[in-house]
Amino acid sequence: MTPEAIEEQVKAAKLAQAVPKETIKPGGSEQVKLRRWLVSFGSAQEWYPVGEFVAIDADSAISRAIEVFGAATRHQAEEIPWDAAPLPKLTCR
Image 1: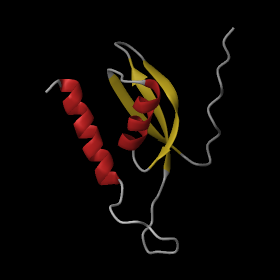
Image 2: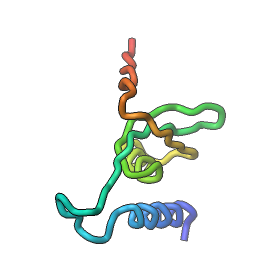
Image 3: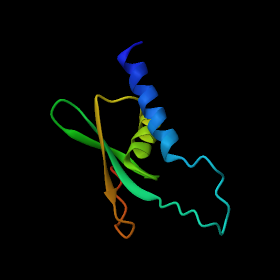
Image 4: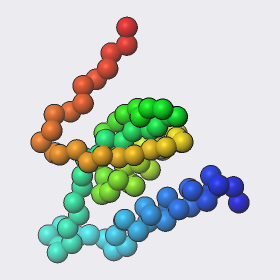
């Protein structure tokens, strides 16, 4: 098995643990807290923010970023407070 395949299995297992096994019913006692995450991918020298994601935890946010943008050599997620302003959109010239 390749290292990439092992990494994908580990990520899938972490995501499966984060998702509740039972259906959450409205008004039930189960409470899910979603958070806002700034996900960045890293190169050899710098970190590049790739976007904001709403997820239960950092691993879920990173997994979603990888689904959208593809694999990266390094990645990180920082929690963003809900009352923070959105990131400015970059315009190309």
